[in-house]
Image (cartoon, rainbow, N blue to C red; front, side, top):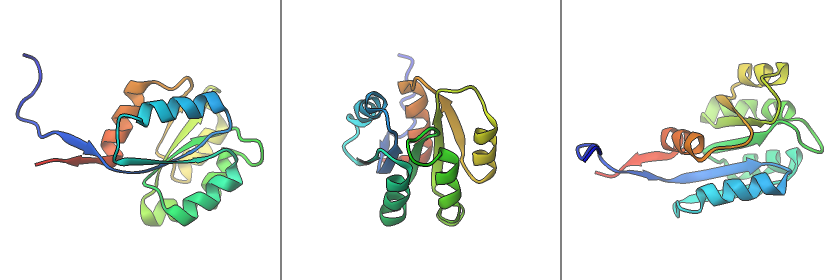
Length: 137
């Protein structure tokens, strides 16, 4: 058996806000999180709606599309910069583009990492474990 029986199991607990205007990508995030009943998923389809939800609900993790119909992902990060620094809100940028200047700027304002699309379950699980993981002893 190759599993490590000595490491405690990890439960994923917390709130994830996904700001994404493409319904297919939102459905993919929903499917990825569906197996984790202790994760609450909040959804926003525009940047302004996402900023409002982030300020009201104070999620643990923000999955942020960089290209939104009303404001850019960079503008969302700017609007939430105080919350990002004071509450340690984790921001993951989602982009269909290659690494861009907006991604660099958003990361300099506190975004933690970026994921090129399409999203993968392995990448999502890794960040979920880091941000929302709680050891069950």
